[in-house]
Image (tube, rainbow over all chains, first blue to last red; front, side, top):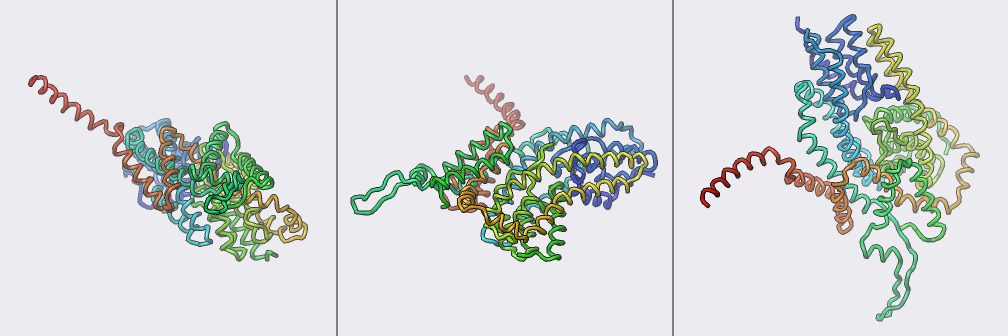
Length: 274
Length: 268
């Protein structure tokens, strides 16, 4: 009798895929997590020694952006189904597909989910949260998870239906367009955030005089900078941080450095709260 | 403020959930916006929790697990700083400042735990040998619980000792020049997160869009939604007009134009 995966197998693989990284470790990273996600599928297709071999096959090294694992689960499910029905698919081919897909898909998933979706939904939530409104955290939680669960659920189906054809999709234009588009959106919003969601005030007085109308005019460093363009100091600091991060300086140390800068400047009266 | 027994239990439970979330990176229960809100709710002051969460979220915007890199621990930092602000009567600025060393310590702890987790992977190998899917599942769940306790246990320790006089007087001894300076610094500390996101994109040739966003935000009062829509439109237009995505049609058009130029030649 031909072995066929059922809807409930995919449903449970989807549920389990939400726990992919639980056993993330320094040796095989998401290896155990991937196998954990495949368990409902492998149990349907194999028994006895074949099951043992299949479990071992999926405990190998694996690591990618977690959400884009969905289509890979779909493809390997399709391949395992064929294999269980007698097709001659060696272990190395299944592992090759996994390893071959995880790099390119991480290259797509990282900028889309970590670079664009999360910063934007989180910044949106944080801007609402500034007033203490519960809508802030809710907005972030609902928006982010809605997209994530959608990708996880349909990713598995998409991978299963397309099978190994998906490799062409990865190589083709479609994903590149999506990645580039997401990067543009992400960078645009980062630019806006650097300008708007920062605050620097340098109240050092440069000149103080009475103008012809008899008004008292005080010119501060911040006033001069703002007349050039608002947000120049944060822009400079952003580029400084980017440079330091590229030199592999730990982000936490940079944060401490900026804290120290804030304390020193505040103590000397160079900076104040706006 | 004294934290009662039920609150300590709830902090332990939520801390554990946040720790699991920090490892899974799925539901985002470890992100400050969610974790600070939940901790605030437990301590009876959700509004303060939300405000700390929003502030800390912007600082942590770029904290992400990419490849084998492990991010500073937002979960531990969020839960503990919220406890210190609400139950330890600290200013939000001071809470944020205390959150940073905690995030760094949490990062080290996460690296240690993820190294120890190798054990679960090896146990799972043994169960695969026996064909026991139940055993493999258990290894995975145990690893998850272990990751949860990594945050749950330290959080509960802080919750138990924050009400004591020693800790209270220690926190009260922070001089005003430090808290004021920290408040000033929290205005621009967020740029570290922005810089991390920008670097992660690794697309220098797309930086004009960063400057566009910067200038549009500088001279308008648009909110984030409006700015996001403009960014999205810019992205769509870029992709629609970019010649590198037109390749197939260009080939077809080239074929057509070559015959047209043939015709031109004949006309000449």
